[in-house]
Length: 112
Length: 111
View 1 (tube, rainbow over the protein chains, first blue to last red):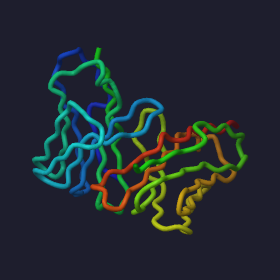
View 2: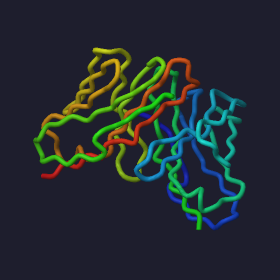
View 3: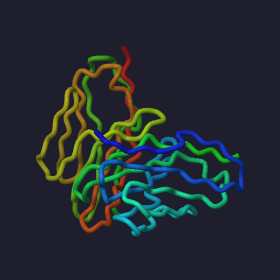
C-alpha cells in the first residue's frame, strides 16, 4: 500500500499569489515526480528528483519550481499564480526505474 | 518520438459484458508497460506491470497482455464498480524515469 500524501486536495487562489503544493511520502523512495493533468488529457511530467538536492525539469515546460531537501518531501511552488496554472497536480514516487509509480490523491488548483 | 495511444476513448458496457481496452505504443526500446485505474478526482492506482512480449498478468476481472507493439486490458464480466478511467504508460529504455502516459479509456459499466 502506497503512503504518499498531497495537501491541499483543493485550492482556489487569486492571480498573483504565491502557492506551495505539498507532497510527502513514507516509503523511503529516492525517486519522486510531479505530473500535471488536465481533464481528459495525459499526465505530463513537470519535475522529478532522484534524491536529496537533486531536481530536474520534465518534458512539459512549467513556471513552477521544486525542492528536495529531505527524502520525504517534494514541494512544488508557484511564485505568481495565473489562470493558465489551473489544473490537477499529481505527485508520485518510485522505488526504481523498472518499477511502478505510486501516486498521491492530487491537488486540484484553480486560479481566478 | 515515444508515444502511447489508447482506444477507445470511452467504452460503455452492460454489467457482465466482457470487452478489451487497447494501448498501442511506439518507443525506442521498452523497459516496462504499466496499467493504472483512475477514479474521478483521484490519483492513478497501480494495476499491472508488463516487461516483455507474451507476458500476462491477472487480477480479479482484469487481465493484461503485452505484444511488441501493444497491450490489451481484458475485462471479464465487469461490474459497475469497475467504472473508471484506465491509463496505460510506458517506460522507455534510456529514459530518465519519465513514464509516458496515454489519454486513457473511460469505462462505464451499467447495471
